[in-house]
Length: 222
View (cartoon, one colour):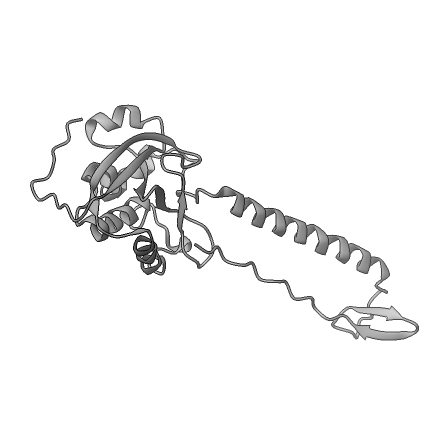
């Protein structure tokens, strides 16, 4: 596929800003040359890659990692988008400004995906958008169901250990509650027809069981 450099290319500083593009599916091997494909992307600046991914919590989906090493995807190419005059702390502040708008629970493959995030980020840092082919399939949304593999619903966060730890905690808590519930049921006397709530018999007195509150899951934080 031939790429043409835009005549409106802006150069704001001396720190290069790259768009790192990854393949989400082997179909890209053919679709790339047609200007299509299903891609994940991240913005590399000051040696850090920033990207956006999905999770079920109402906190930001923006995450950072090693450039060109996003877990779960196949790196394709790095594209120089432009240059910026912002330092590392200023870039970080820019990500914090974008955090509220890019929550993990708001991720949508068609209307708000990682490429939308990268496009807005690159414009803020350099004044230049990302190449149109990177997110073209999202604009042709009706084709996605035909092209995407069934296993791809959304781009998950690169730091999968966070999600795995939460899943393990939830499963452990579920097993714990199940075990406690089983022990309690073994001590429950047969309820009378006049009582609407279960009771536990303790030393000849009837005491109603209080419900146990579950601890809320802590959100992911950038």
